Image 1 (cartoon, rainbow, N blue to C red):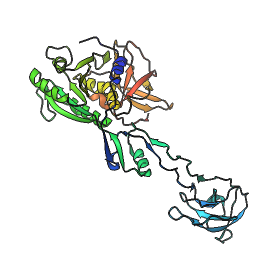
Image 2: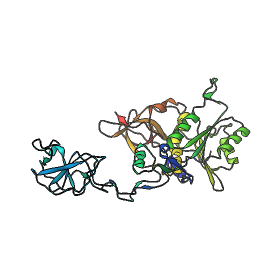
Image 3: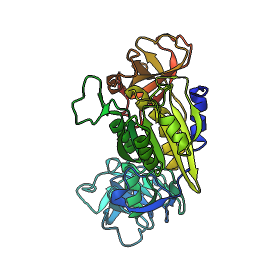
Image 4: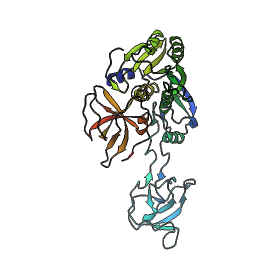
Length: 416
């Protein structure tokens, strides 16, 4: 194994190679959820397109004093606007969202008037009980968006809120980034399909399932190619197939054991090593390389075979690359939280520990730790929704502030 490097350097080297894919496709709005926009989208008209009432009440000319009595000339409903300009001394019954008629520039809330039943039982007159300024309770034309204003940007992920915005804009098709193709290869004679009953010396292939799910959560398209044995020919054939994807993830076989064949096989297939070994627990054997053939590039990660190591190194290193390929950028500002629970012992490597993110009674974000468990233990991951990052050779007290990296798709932050 070549020189091990610090996690921050490893992440930088990955992110330098996380250039957006050129492939694009147009999809109907119904299929856009979870996709990444590949175009900026602007509002073609001012929004709202007309002055709209923000309240149920009476549309009128603002600048009147309390006690004014106006003649009620009709009504404006959301689906049936008042058709003529409002005259002097007139008001119009209006409902929330309805068009403010020409000649009116304010709305008096119904509770600030004599009511929809009128004045002294006469629905043709209304008394205004408070002063009404011009612009009161009106969503003015163009007050939320001006014509040509950008609403969504390339790189935005389309969520339910974005679907609603697209529908408001009348957009029924959008251009999105193609999903990065991620090939996943499990390796090792000891690994068997998850449907099989393993012998005492075997383990089920859980990693490829978890990694495929992590890819889907990020918007990539995974392809599980199967399990390659510890035999050079079969391993080479499967890895060569995986190199046709945008990203190849191999699982296991990247340490220094006599039967760890992955690194040498990748080199024989033209993969150039960027780094091999990270000062991280779990995840020290992590490999990252690139194969370039003409205009095509395949980013290759050799992930450790232990479940916690594979899961953690995906979130810390593979996820930023996939976001970059999608045009989302490689990640935002670090999130910090206060440690709760038994602090870990100092370790010569940076620690990534499963933690549950909670909002404490003090209003701060807390990272509730479990014990540091073996990297072969997949069950510790289930209790967390983020990785708490503890720097190497650091002794932390309860309540110390640390960086946290949420899982690829977190379950959210709940109360303590």
